[in-house]
Structure formats: structure tokens, C-alpha cells
Image (tube, rainbow, N blue to C red; front, side):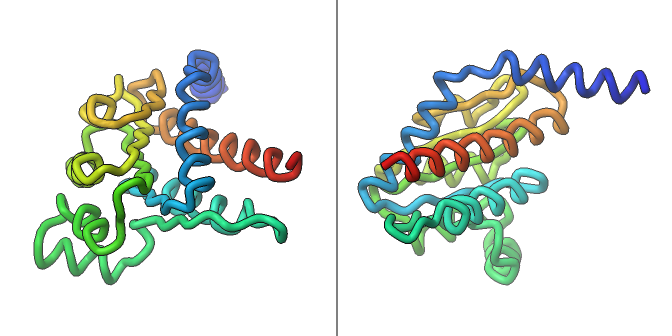
Length: 187
């Protein structure tokens, strides 16, 4: 019981320390993309890849309301054939940047999720996106890592443990989904 309580207590502390202003900036950036008919790309590895897929699903389907245009959102973690082809033929470090080269346009938004903030394939993709004029949003932990130094908007989870950082990133997705759903219903 003590281990369970310790984990829950840490997660509660991390949530209490979350910078709400940064969360709002993240939402505003995503809504600006929506309002300007821009695409949104989401990337991450491991648990963060799962969160990237979840974000794309919730934005693409979960916020669909008959009277509203839909989000143009793609998780670059979802096509296994494409990911393994780029990984095998070029490098895993370039798996996201190579996909972006086919799809992204200046003004689009790229959301990079990395618990450590130092996943090389995420860093390279986010730098590329920034270089061509995309808006970049980084969700990280562990002090933010390199990701926090290169993104326009950052939400850094104040934890050095992967589980709680990944938990909060998923909670951020649900906050985003809830906020957008309420916004659409109010208008």
C-alpha cells in the first residue's frame, strides 16, 4: 500500500505544480491551427507514441461536432510500415523528420512529446519544423531537456520519473479534449 500511496502522492504533487499558463498556451496554439485551417502533427516514442496516437484520435474524432470543421491532425507514430522503412533505410533518428518532409507546411503545428525531453528523433523533427516556419509545442518532463529549448510553447512536467510524466501528458490530452469540446458546444 505504501508504494501505491507514494506514487499517487507524487502524481498529485506534479499535477499541483503544473504551469497552467503553459497548458493554456499549448491549447491556444492548437486552436490557432484549427482556426487557420492548419495541420497538426504529433510525435513521440514508446508511451509518448501512444499519447501521440491518443491526441490525434481525440482531436480528429473526439472533437467532431456536425456543425464544425474538423481538426486536420496526424500522429506520425501510427504507420508502422513507414516508420520501419525510414528507420531501416535512413535512421531511427530521422523517422519523424522524413515523414514531415512529405506532409508539413509552414504555419502547421508540430507537437513533440518526450518524457526526457531528449529523444533525438523528436528533437530533429521539432528543429526541422521550426526551421521551416511551423509552430512547435513540446510536452516533456525531467526539466524539459533539449525539447524545451527549441519549442515555441512548452509544458514541462516537474518529475524525473517516466510514469508520472507520461501520466500527466495523457491528462494534458484529456484537458485539451475537454476544453475544445466545451468551446465548440458554447459557440
